[in-house]
Image (cartoon, rainbow, N blue to C red; front, side):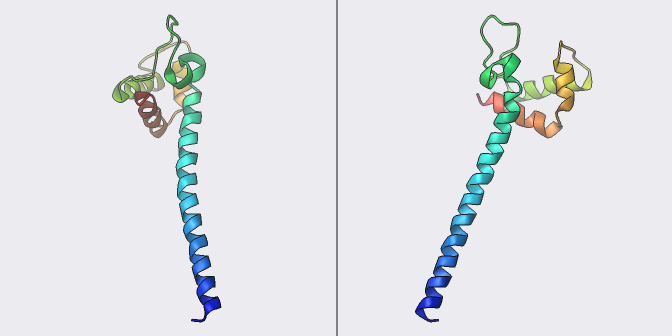
Length: 108
């Protein structure tokens, strides 16, 4: 292999490694941003990151146990529990989205 071929191969490898690194970081960032956007749909009633304003009628989601949040959302969605709007909103969530939201708010 001559010097030009060696440099070309090395450059191609470095570009490939950089792309792999960026793709991984982008994928994690995109996933985190998607989850944050999904959780933001709860902010109108439950406050930013689930931190409802003290004294308000809505529940503070931040820090609640994950399993509790899952159970509540599934009960709203499946008709076991009614509310002013949650039984309607929760119908739009898949099990995966409910799990992701529950984990997100439990970790806040």
